[in-house]
Image (cartoon, rainbow, N blue to C red; front, side, top):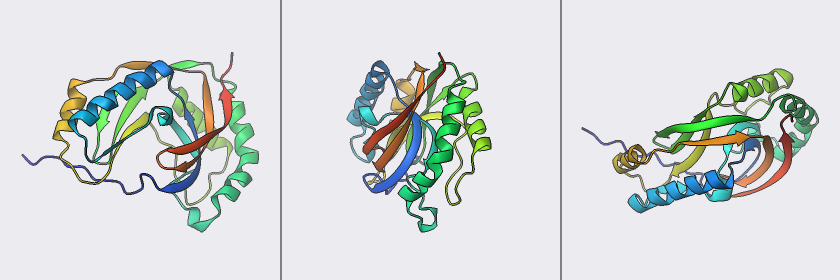
Length: 206
């Protein structure tokens, strides 16, 4: 049987400006994920880029996507133009959501990445849909995802056999729960979130 091989991405470490919304992991959960990634590096030291502890995050949606060029528009100017409508809309929506839990158990090894997928009570998708209904997304970007996930690994050169990676993921399951009490607006400058700053926080309802 033919082994599945990685499809390396080329943009890790490259400078790409973006303005994104995500949620942070607790220190305890970052420790769990970092320990898991350290174990992965031991069995597959080549061909993988693992997320750094402070860069680990739960994806929500992009205001200005890092890896899209919006037909050559100045992305910082685009963000500044969108902010006046995006910020109040997102704050209004998040202010009506009570803190909730996301349960992560589903590890998915794909040719370009390893992602950890979680489940909630519908809050993530409801938030995304309400936001899209409230604003006009810029052309040349991308739609929000329809899953709750955190990207743990990106596969980079050299191309590798993913069989031992899949075996490690299968024999080292992850089971953690993250309490979501706020979302963050982040300016990211180098992928994947290697150089970033937190611009604002959107706390959920008391």
